[in-house]
Image (cartoon, rainbow over all chains, first blue to last red; front, side, top):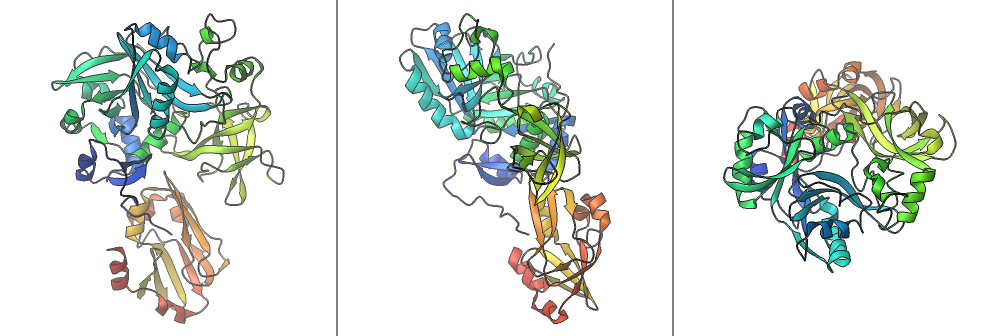
Length: 385
Length: 121
């Protein structure tokens, strides 16, 4: 077998403000989206995953993009209206102190990136994928520079996820206990001015916190000093988000798949759909609005392979145990430690996408049966009230 | 008993003309917690370098290659039922399969413990 080297191959990778801490904690570092990032710590992916669901996991997600949008004339509604030119979601109706999932679309109705939008009294904060952040920033400057100031932050970003996340963060951070799922507010942590959102990408309750780079290590070390909090790498971040049925850009989402095909129609509010007061007006609106009415020819679905063997991203999907042309493809697949079974997501023709449909995935030349199941694979534990 | 290693991080213990094959502690640590193991069929005749077994962690699948030509005479079903055995005890309870070597003399071409340790250091 080939055993991966411990060191990332490229020395041109960027480092986050927590790089030295990762090394001190014994992390195995890999190249990811241009950054040298911890893929796992000595605890290992499996136990890191289970620890996050049972207690609290701390993730360095400083590689992700943090972009602030302000209206040149000062009225945040103007920035919200402008951003609606690029995303098919209701930004104007987003209340101050709230956050919402969104995606940038292209003229074909495909997805350029998925992101979170948080609204503050005088600005919008966008959190986007590391691999896309430069393109996203350029896209925003191209489209919105007429009326908006666009600023990319260089702060650290951490996620603290799991049932003990609140009890770990609350003693350090002002007024976070009263936050509900998808709330966003400024907070003070150990004297540093931070931004907290009650969200994440694991299916668990928790927070993402933007921290000034100079304070990041001290705050993270203080959080890690609590017995319930363990550092978690990108390996477990991936298995946690897959169990939660959440998409990874570049795998489950890309420029050639639309929000309706992605089963992300829920993220397009009525006000932006046909008949809504601000219907359309975003790239690819014709394609997406037509698909919202008529349905898409293919859909992203959850899949449970029947055996114990994980079926990975890229595996082709077939309707029968023998012969026939491939009808779809697994886009994310692996082993779900909390489910204790292999799990996957992939695209299937609409006729095969119903819950309970049985399909076959190519696994090392054999057809592995898999059943279409409801997403997510684990029950979410978001704090709604 | 004779113990040898391969550059692909397998160990072989020779008794008579049958070699027991497993993966090294270094490989088990690098792979992380295993969640799935697929073993060859008993009776299969394998050439050196053929894929013999597949191991999967949460993150990725890896092939275990046939270290020397031979016939599979026994497999360790215990690691199929509990892949964590490979991580807990890679050199003993976590063995993979037994191979009746086509040519016992080939065993001498493998790495000794000293050479393997030099390889991974």
